[in-house]
Length: 71
Image 1 (cartoon, helix red, strand yellow):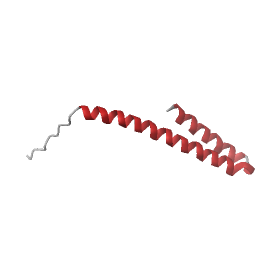
Image 2 (tube, rainbow, N blue to C red):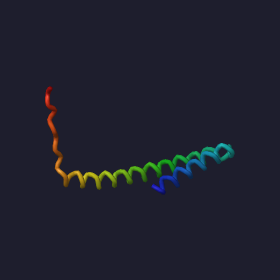
Image 3 (tube, rainbow, N blue to C red):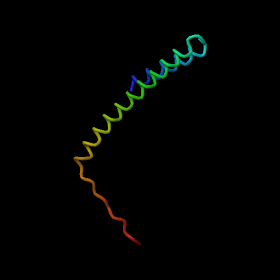
């Protein structure tokens, strides 16, 4: 998760610089988009790893369902 914060901070800095450097605007915005993409990849990997771990725990414990009782 620390990498996600770093990537998002770098993207923010690129966007801020793009506002003050009109000649490099497109290059900096492209870099910002790249860092946001890296942050999304990191987030997906993190949540996939968490879900795999959770799925293994769920498989070990049998699920019991209770049928609703009509009043």
